[in-house]
Amino acid sequence: VTAIPTSSPVPWRPADATRLVLVDIVGGSAVVVGWLGTAQTSALSRQLTWVTVAVVGLVIAGTGNALWLLAGRRNVGLRLRAALDEHVTGPAAVPVPGVVAHPAARALVAVPRGSRYHRPACVLARGKEHQPATAKRHLANGLRPCEACRPEVDE
Amino acid sequence: VGVSAFVLRQWDRVASWVAVALGALVLLIGYIGVSGTPYVFEQVPYVVSGGLGGLFLLGLGAVMWISADLRDEWRKLDSLEEALREAAVVAPEDRDVP
Image (cartoon, rainbow over all chains, first blue to last red):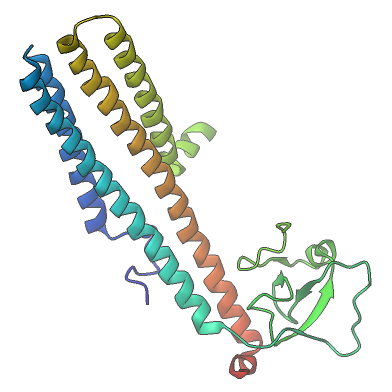
């Protein structure tokens, strides 16, 4: 139930990008104006006013940038959660009858007719028949590591 | 060709490094300016331009870098959704297992 279409190449709406650019222009301009203001007077009390303008500009830009990152993080999380919620299964993977993993084999499994290999606890392998083998063997069979459980990464 | 293709594909990361380098340079210029005068009223403009301006550019660079990471993560989800769809096609009956 992500707010951004999955066809979008980035996790933001065009309006988010417009807002970010505007906020950074306003914030950066305030810093420049503050700098010019301080440079045109030698009275410290007046300079402090311009320093305040620059600091406010920095805060505006920082807030806008933080909101931009939070929106992106949120949209990535929503899409991931929606995808996993749709396909989560229950019990652990069950071995294919008659197929016994070699004791030296690392516990990585492949679902029959699938194109990826998984960790046994992966949501994409749980509850399904699987063929255990080493990563090397799976790769030799033309399979690629699952993007969800990332079995190629050591824990 | 390789460099231009990389810049086109990773323009946000390249821009991020440019912003960070500029920010560091502006901070250095601000430091040199502040240390070059004993008068506070002459130091304040350097603090604003060099200090706050440098922080602004460093922040901008960091945001662009993290944005590039989020964009990559978003694209990675395409592969993940494809894997999920494939898993559902391979064993659709298993989805009903509690």
